Length: 174
Image (cartoon, rainbow, N blue to C red; front, top):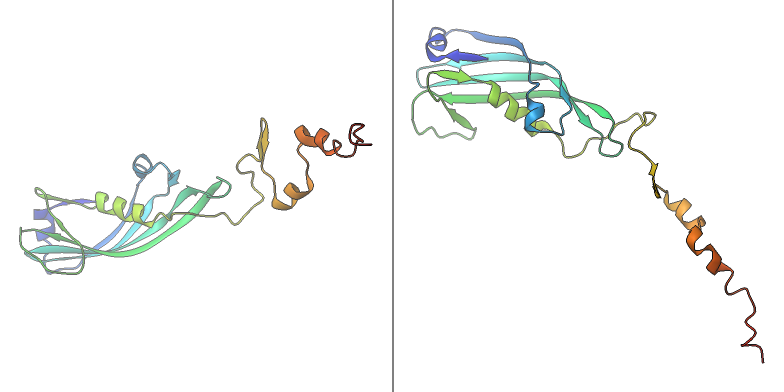
């Protein structure tokens, strides 16, 4: 999704529709919590004038993220609408939306799309299907226990002390 400024200026004051499927797999190297990313379907349009290019984008696809509880893969849907403005000249442009300065003669939307996807990654994501095998529940000298199991269980290392007070101490009988 790269265009030179001369390519875009040919479409000034005309309709410039966007409908592409882009591969964003390199986002996994930026954020290691993203396990995989589907190809993203980018639709929208560009409004081009002499001072700026405004892209109205809709991004659809999904990311594969680890479940915060069990570490199994979770398919997280992406459905984002955004407006990105690129300034063609170094003008002071006052707006509430974020603007990008064009460096050189090429507008590249891929870094902007990657940034938008990174901002969509939630702090925690949970799987709804608990039947999949997730994180290990036990290992060498440890296991995950529930609160109700903790109350009923006696540590085997201290089991001998439970009988200590049941024995009669001959020195205390007088």
